[in-house]
Amino acid sequence: MNLNETTRTGLGVAIDAADLVGVAVDPATRTAIVTFLVPVPADGECRRARDVQLLLHPVARVAASLRHGAPHGRAATVVAQSLGDLPATVRSFGGMPVHGCGFFDAHETGLAQWGDRLSLDWRSGRGAGRHSLTLCQDAADRRVDLCIWFDDLEVLDGRGFRIPVASFIADGRECRRALRSRDLRMAGHRTMS
Image (cartoon, rainbow, N blue to C red; front, side, top):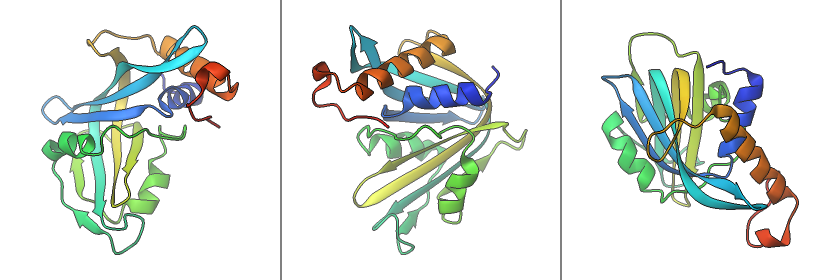
């Protein structure tokens, strides 16, 4: 897949405000599955109803920083992690939403903030990973920042069937328009910028 600027931005819109519910990396196959609950457009409304997985492959590197205490302060305790710890760590945040649209190929910005406090830095030893996905979960007393470098991605539904990337992006843009319109049917949803 060609992850050009338009596609990266569209994918960012599609996962903005989605709940991050899972991350799993298989070093043997060099794949990562990142699972979200994403808003789905339906009759002019958006509902958090669909499991979507981003299948990233081949994975070249995974870096993470899990910090306890005041996670934005330099005194926060960095907690060592392994690839096997990531699923439980992400689940422990309870499926918090991710925000922003600059999730793809934004690793330099992310690593500038937390790269000197790594809990995990796994490298496959093969390839540099042409693209990256950067995510975080931020609770009051801890935070995890995560970056996965990869070459290609696929979008899958909760049953593992492919979703065309263009359709996934279109659904994300439709939800964003609905939320921006402040439609009365959307009462209780936050407005996205």
